[in-house]
Amino acid sequence: MPRRFKFAITSSRKFEVERPEWHLTSGRWRTLRNRWLMQQPTCARCGLHGEEVHHVVPRHVAPHRLYDPTNLMTLCKACHVAEHHGNGPYGEQPIEGPQ
Image (cartoon, rainbow, N blue to C red):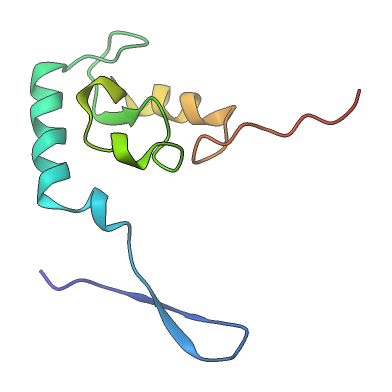
């Protein structure tokens, strides 16, 4: 299957290719993800059927732990959304101002 790329206009008005997150589409990730879901099929939060593999420490914080099994947990879709709800889409902690 050919890869699809999006094009974005930069400030210099040139088109640049925005590549998808290659590590989440790689064969290595798919193999690890499928093996993980076979070994850990239930959601770690609610016990229902798990369909998503969540990185406990976000990928942008510890990219070296991308394929580390100790950094993974199985979640159902609802719990995965809830896990990211308070932390932003990529696990960023909200900035707390003076109160």
